[in-house]
Figure 1 (cartoon, helix red, strand yellow):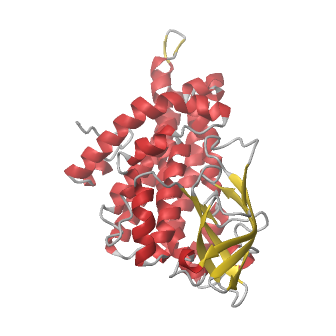
Figure 2 (spheres, one colour; figure 1 turned 180 degrees about the vertical axis):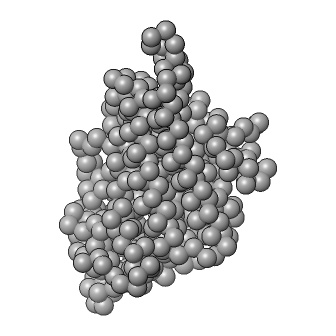
Length: 392
């Protein structure tokens, strides 16, 4: 399949990809444009999830790009970033599905699981046979998850008993397993557990009334004396530091998704302004519209430069928490500006799903908040710059 650079990739960063990676991007782009994009507005409006895309994405190896048993980074981080961008360019909810499955759930097992756990679960998740979720955030614990987890795990012989609750858990209404993070009642350290969602005492209830990422099936999870065997405890997750290793890897890909969401809004705005005629000519020929478009492509290009470099640092083994935190904070802030300018360019039509910008505009708010708010990521970077922790 022929690969063509995105018109919104103004400085041609995609040329950093090798030919195999370009072919994979071209195939994914074709699938998303022909099979996914035509259905997302309907599902967004109905707040339903197109389950058929789980297998469709698996057939294009999207879930197996990052994690394999012996080689967790078979493909370049820059390539994986462009996958996240491509997904979010079509729909941020689809990018979130993959981010939860591939980055958070599979990532938890790959980074903190044993060799036996990786061999058992990762191939089944890569094929789409098993869908995963990631249970960290709680009703009263979000930004303070490192200290504020209230879900408790109590050892009882060869089993663990989990009690507590989780909130905003993506994929959780239909996931087969959920990685639950809980404090060990004995030592107070955070540990991870692979919890099959059919386990007695596990309940997931869909969160209704969302105005962002409406396709994502977020759930409240209740854990009441949920028993899991020691074999389902992630064997290398012994403190929140191990949880943070997973978040560092996925935070950079959320930054990529933010760029993709900006690109989706920009492309829709550019297309619309070239076709929309007012005062006898396309509104794209008006100075004020061109100003909005140029500011948008400027934000996209600057953000792309940042996420490309952060991913290169991951490949080099030099990326740190503050690097991914700055990328997430910066790109999501620029995304917020960009989708607003694109909505403005469409006038009244900017709030109608038919023209695509409205969906990107609304979904930006969720991307701006999850995987660490701008403020929390700013404080991570601020601590790195000054040596002082200013979290509280």
